[in-house]
Length: 121
Image (cartoon, rainbow, N blue to C red; front, side, top):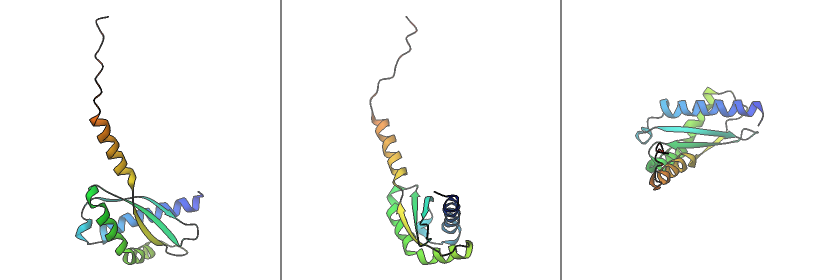
């Protein structure tokens, strides 16, 4: 990925986080919402934003709220960032947080005996 695209992704991610945290007054977004990754196409027509939420039970609802608010978010993004074209934003669930929690649970449930110190040798 070239520097221009990296800068664009970074700036869009920063602005999206700011919009979600400070400008959206939806009570369903009161939980901790994080934009973990942003990928914009080279022509700036489309943007995929991966969303992570602290409470995994609410992730689908939060994603739907963000998707329905795409028009508002796009307008705010246009005000904050100078881009050739403001992309159509699609919000998708970031599975990495969910997968990390699942792996942690599996590791916690393994019955691995602890090694005892063999100082008596």
